Length: 456
Picture 1 (cartoon, rainbow, N blue to C red):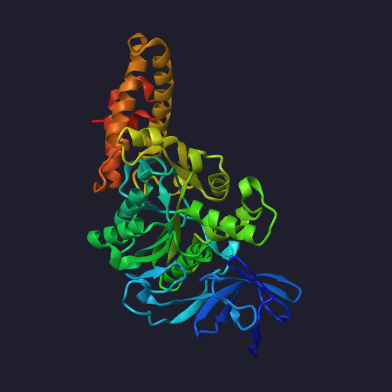
Picture 2 (picture 1 turned 90 degrees about the vertical axis):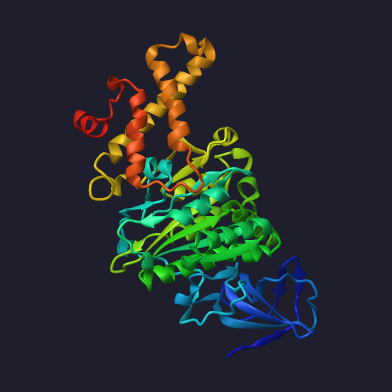
């Protein structure tokens, strides 16, 4: 039985307090009816006995303490889903904003998702080709993995996200069963238009589902945006058998909305004012990636976050690094030098790379070549540090070779055009070509057979 409650106990910011409520559930969807006949939506965010705190999506301006009528829906927020999701653009709470009207839904799913039983999880294998050499060769993205991109304010992470969406392909997947779910949180109007226009112009919009939350939208919508996006991804992956790549930007905006929301509830803050449950909250999003035994589809995540002051020890990148299987770090110095994408090789890694590369997946030389490029580039940093002290002319011949290798590596391998889509074989061949800058005896991570076969 649905009971209507009339009148509010208290209004505080975007929160309202209701007394004498029985049988309410956490995350339950609520409908508010105002005196002027308009309706607003909210959800239950805190329960204390018969006292309920509700967050209103559209804000509390104009609400009356005496006459506002509240109806609890007896179910959590749900997202209508069907195969028609592909090619559509939605708001942060799943409402169509592309002018094409509502979708004809097959069902509605709880946006909080259902946890995947660890026993039923399938180990991620098989790589996703992004067409970007540094990612494909050195920290390969594996199907079912969660691999975040750590960026900084003003850097080209939006361009990188668009390029990944435009070029991403899964080995063995057909065109009809690969899709992308793109969620933007707290972005400005011009950024949202850039994403939409880029996908339309490149012709990939037909297999992209977009969820856009603008910077002037309510923070509660920002908190729900990744949940709606992941719900759509899980439906397409596990019920439609598709391989879905989820790109979410910017997780720092999401975390700041969570901090503001926590503060409005009067919760005790943790590090840098973020709530103490930030780790578990982020984990509830990131752990929705993966593959399930008996299901053909998969969900792969690339969350993008901006590090305040480029600080990788900031709570958001710090906790994200604990939960996910590696990270791709963008470097401001490379960005300032005009290198795109400005991927910082040494602090980046993919912990699942070893299980999705090599013979049968990419090529037999992939893993040893990646190890050699990592090793050589680490020695480049040593040579540059030494050159800054004694001068480049005083370096040994080997150190000079490493200096030359570092220059060519950054100019030809790390740097590539925004529209340049390299196959994995082109990337690996380019890596071998660059290694010719070094003496043969310095290639200590490669065996002689591979060197004779590929270094032509």
